[in-house]
Amino acid sequence: MADPRFETPEPFKIEIPEHRLIDLDERLRRWRPPPRIADAGEWAYGTDPEFLAELVEYWRHGYDWARCQDAINSWPNYQVDIGPQRLHFIREPGTEVDGAPRPMPLLLTHGWPGSIVEFLDLIDRLAHPERHGGDALDAFDVVVPSLPGYGFSGPPVRGDGSTGPIGPRAIASLWHRLMHDVLNYRRPYLAQGGDWGSAIASWLAFDHPATREKDDWTSGVRALHLNMMVLRPGIDERARPPSPEEGRWLAEVRRDRAATTGYQRIQTTKPQTLGVALHDSPVGLAAWIVEKFHGWSDRAGKAQPPFPLDTLLDNIMVYWLTGTAATSTWLYRGVVEERSIALPEGQRVEVPTAFAAFPADLAPPPPAAWIERAYDLRRHTPMPRGGHFAALEAPDLLVEDIRAFSRPLRFGAAND
Figure 1 (cartoon, helix red, strand yellow):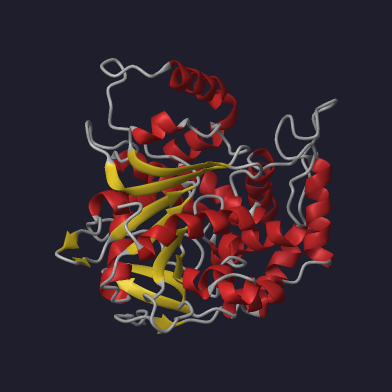
Figure 2: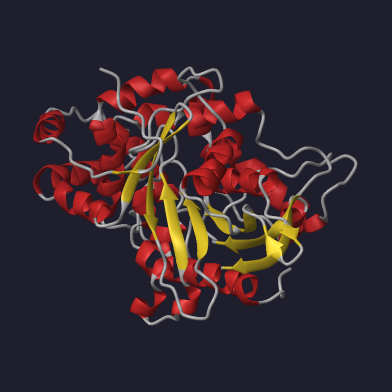
């Protein structure tokens, strides 16, 4: 029997059956550690075997999925079908203040190998700042979707209705339909993202900007907040050569690319092959993901990833229990097929943009001049700490930067 269609948002509750958890425990019990490379640094050749063994031991005997499931279910979860694409999202309306503008809608988009888990501790701070020592005037209506092929969303569906890779620009179109058609926002919204979320949010702002009609704004992206730059400027570097500062940054990024982006080459070219291993082995999936949480984070001189084991496993479990480890990698192939890694030549994202530059990202943050080639940059914040997973590593810095950027947009024209 076919699944029912959700033409309007259907309340959704995560309920993982016990037999799935029993199966996981059996797989963890039977995992086979591979031979270790002699005299290797702890993470020099990939995931540290000792750390992985510690993680698996805790996974089996100390980790509690019910705690994470309850944390996700504590927020209003929904599923909805937009065309053939099923999407999962969390929506928490913000605190309203009498006599003030309604809370600005805020769309938070994760990337790979992240998930909605990254934002669970941000939702209440952003929607109800007065509960955390802040001002209710800073409240947002917070919307946190799971990307197609990730978590509790359905597998990605192409324009012809077939299941397969889609790119960030297609997802951006789904996001606007979610905000405008499904959630009925007729006021502008703020889009935020890092990793793939930054590319999706950028295409959303490019294709669906809010526009002013007389004294009112139409629905669409009013402003953009990024903590990574994935989308490339639409420029010919031969015609518009980089400045010395940009040149040094580009040289550094290109020099390190071979050592840091091997995973991209695999997921871009042969995701189906890799997907078999990730879909079948929970420890293999954990090793593939944890290595990124180690290499892309601000460890402040520590050898191991700067996250509690529970946090690492919460994120891994969302992939494992939903069976989306394989489909999540399709996005890397989708961006190639869609040809959406760069803006059209000579064009920019013209909505006001803020960039939070966290120093320990997977690549050095770009200089402001490079960002300005692709965006109408209004705020550039070099952060004192934090890396790729900013919402987990430095939530206080990320939240305050989003709030500070949005205030003039809510109450005045300082950023117009």
